Length: 84
Ligand code: FES
Image (cartoon, rainbow, N blue to C red; front, side, top):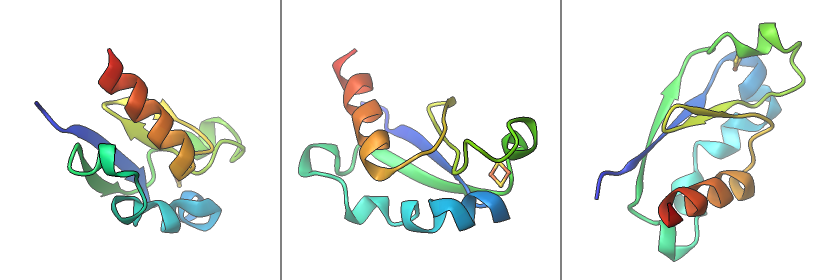
């Protein structure tokens, strides 16, 4: 099965708003999600400007934007994708 692609914005705004913690998501996901995704750090995606900072930190999971991303929120989206 192809791995899910998790892109974490590491621009200044997202980094300060929690992306720094998200970079370690591989160590914090539950066992059923381990090895099922690849993490990539990106520079500012430009979304913080469009949405006036309120949605940071931003990540993309298989190209789908998740705003106010937390490890829990990302895990929920991953589980939903695995169920599809
Ligand atoms: S810093 Fe993340 S979208 Fe700009």
